[in-house]
Length: 330
Image: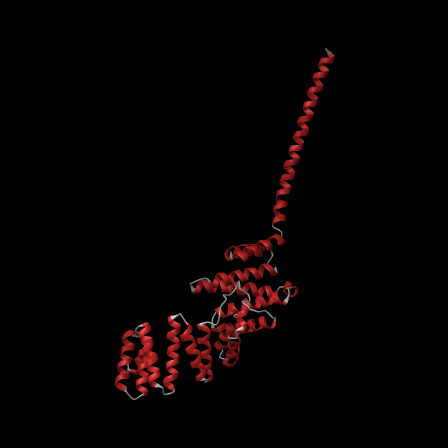
């Protein structure tokens, strides 16, 4: 009887110990899980992994995702050079893809803020010249997008990019446009000359920020403007003709023909100038500015009757055409 009870008590005791042991093990597993999950999550979100993820997203062109991730990360690490630069780069890419001017400038301002802060951070000195050169390059283009009032800053940072030996195919073109905007036409022409160098197009440079290709119609038109400002009409005419021959943009062709016709008219080549005006009207339809300029041409030839007829046509097309109205005494 005593032995049977002892065996029963032993089994009960053994079961109780097993329950306690398994319960303790479950508690340990639960506690370890609670501790390890955030540790593993934190490990996965370490800066090295974050950097790899952002670089992967950059290769995929996921600029909006990069913008949001880097913006959130910067709240905790506001002076992180890598986060500041990739945030600025993504803001630039998003900005130039916008249609609305307000949206463009909103992202461009964010780009400038982020990249200027990156250059001021203590870590910028630890990065090589090529990395900083890229920052200068994007900053220069960003300031160019802000308009002529910021052209001097565009020149400053684009020149710093070149000094840092950073190569991008479109630096000379943007420099030429920025120099022209501050009326430094000699520097503008010098930059445009580099932009036209065929060797400049053999290396596409930073292809993830710019589009490859040869000289653009915008470049030819800009060079012509600079040569007109320098008083070199022959070279201006040559580049206007190149713009006309290569451009598929009807507005740029009209702008080039108007400039070319104006030069020819001022040089006394009235028939050649009139032919350019006629080509604009035939190719692009009625145009108030063309009729105004035709009126100026006829006035220069002493034909005031035809001149006034052209100015009246200009006003009918565009009642607000100031110069045509002045010519008619309106």
